[in-house]
Image 1 (cartoon, rainbow, N blue to C red):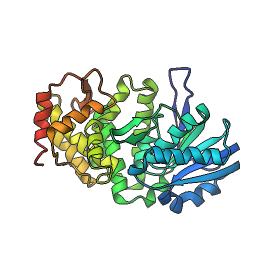
Image 2 (image 1 turned 180 degrees about the vertical axis):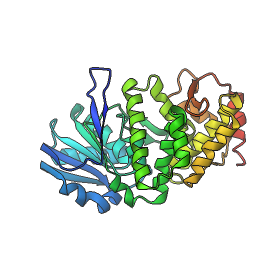
Image 3 (image 1 turned 60 degrees about the vertical axis):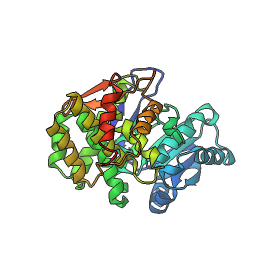
Length: 349
């Protein structure tokens, strides 16, 4: 199956997302495969059997969100220089969202920009991180605060790679699927309530629907100036949770699940979402053993961290909130008192 992403801006190249269509990849150039220790041991042989290129090298990084930093970026760039890649060369991101984000960032700045393709091996990366051209790394101030928009040449989502995912990693990806359904598609949310996507047939349908949704949104708003910001539902809270816990306690999707519940609580307080709908979202998250609570040490510190979020500007915090199931509202005028009231509920969660 092929899903096209056609941008309105002529300056950006359109490309396709292929689902279960990775047969043979042929390139008449040098290729660097960027992967991590876990994916390399599980799937690198499979990828190499389908790769026909002029010359290739493999750059292997440590596995984990805590390695999404300048040191790893330098490892990628140094590897590219050591293997004498040039402006015609290609990078292949072979891993989860961390590998995809860092490889895309490296591709965007190596010799002022070269091509790369995404071959995501986690559910979260297949339905979200690999599509849309966001790249970046973390630093001590927060998540993905340093990066670029750099679209891949193509994306290949292979469901067979998901069979080796640990249950937590799989569920982390489900959180991103639920995120898109809550804000963009009431029918899809209801479908998720009635279908267990741990079953292969339903999983492929969920991947397809999620990629189609994100492709449509990204094509309308490549650089997150409007509707694309809605894809960050739950993330405003989640990024702070990840940073506070040094990216070691929660997987990204787990933090997003908590962030969605916190955003829903704020939406209920402000009258955008009813309590029953908020409980439906929480129940669906729990079906996949996703966390829905978090203990905040300092509500004031948590609140101040919002101002480091990329969506916040001019001393205003931007919140993405569900407006009923299947709808959304973007708010940047919520009072500190209203937000603090929600945060204080989590101080002793």
